[in-house]
Amino acid sequence: MGRADTRIRMANMGTGTRIEHCWALRKIRMNYDGNLGGMDCELAELRLLHLADSALPIGGLAHSFGLESLVAAELVSVGELPEFLRGFLEEGGFLEAVFCREGFRLGSRSRVGEHLEDRLESFARGWLALNERLSAMKPARESRSGSASLGRNFLAAVGGLGDFAAVREALRVSKDAGGLIHHSVAFGLGSGALEFEEDRAVLAFLHSCVASLVSACQRLLPLGQNAATRILWELKPVIVETMRRSIGCSVEDAWCFMPLLDWGGMEHPALATRLFIS
Image 1 (tube, rainbow, N blue to C red):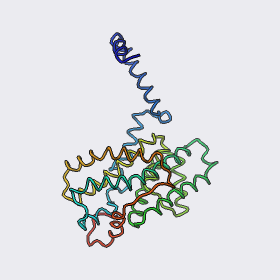
Image 2 (cartoon, rainbow, N blue to C red):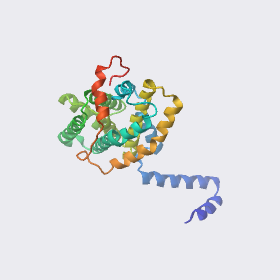
Image 3 (cartoon, rainbow, N blue to C red):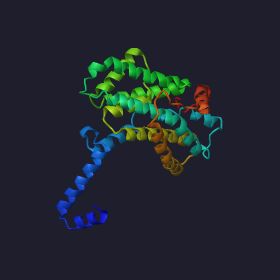
Image 4 (cartoon, rainbow, N blue to C red):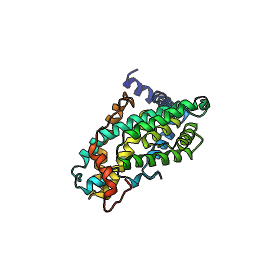
């Protein structure tokens, strides 16, 4: 049926029939996108926005991940910031997106009611190995510790929202092994356990990371609200492209080359005055 035929048919319907027809089309679209295990699409989106919000109390505003050092050394200015953030997304953002996906898939395979007890050993090995691999790809101690602090706090926050077996076991296994919990992996695991849609979860995570860096720059640079809003708005196509690039990449093939930001993280403890932990 063409669009014109559809409009004519709906024009001839009564109000109640038109409403029912619209809801039928909406249900078809929701099923096509994935109805998140029975959760309403709107409710799932709100919950995902909640977890990706910078106001989530996990300590995100306390970290600059090396940016403070670069600003202090006059290596990043307001004019250079958009290009710097694009480079961050293409390198560091890409790496985190790949690990976020792998965490999501681990959480999706280990949902409540799917006999997690039968796979505890396999889950533990996969979870610990994933975080250990990402740790090895973060040479700057402060950036590594900052990611781990946010990850542990995020997973603890999700664990406080309900009984999610994957989240509970991940926290227990990491505590017993003394392992780190990185933010991207934790966000992915929590999103998988909560049955969000994978691509949307990765997009939300990347957007929250860039938004946090822009917020840090507002405290480090003469960057006003309007300029910050414009920078974040113009970065959205890069966020989408980074998400898409991560789809076909495994953690074994993931890479990142940002020596300047790594240097900034390593130099951060030597700063005379600091606004941020990392």
